[in-house]
Length: 149
Image 1 (spheres, one colour):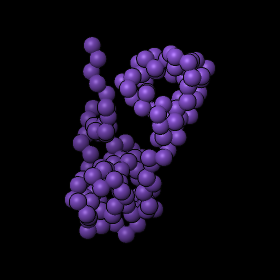
Image 2 (tube, one colour; image 1 turned 90 degrees about the vertical axis):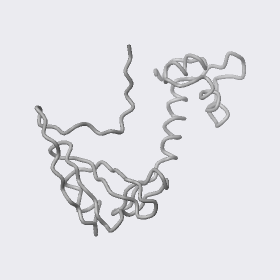
Image 3 (cartoon, one colour; image 1 turned 135 degrees about the vertical axis):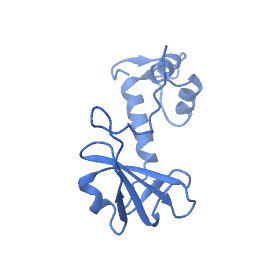
Image 4 (tube, helix red, strand yellow; image 1 turned 90 degrees about the horizontal axis):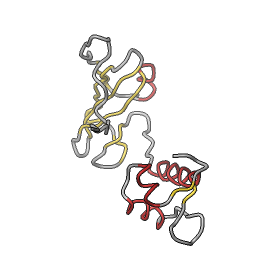
């Protein structure tokens, strides 16, 4: 999306890969059009700022020793204070633990150097990542890439 362009509802939906009703919902939630005449036009810079603020308001920073539980929608301590560190690259990897409240598996990406400061009081078991031809483990599973074609 270009910041200096103006977009109609359908152009904005196509550009961002959403439905037109989603853009209209954003308008009801505070995304202001350039003027009140139809077709509604939205300035790219305003859309970008609106979406950035919306994402920032939904962030839930995790305190040291916690992972974000998607089921509880809160940062939670891992059950029994135990987490697994799965190396993805030489300097970083994923932490995996079980929520102490709902027993859902929780994940958090972290640098290896930050393990002691981000997870104090937790027993961290370093698992060996599966080897591959290029020396990297398989990518994170939190990817929503879709096949096109």
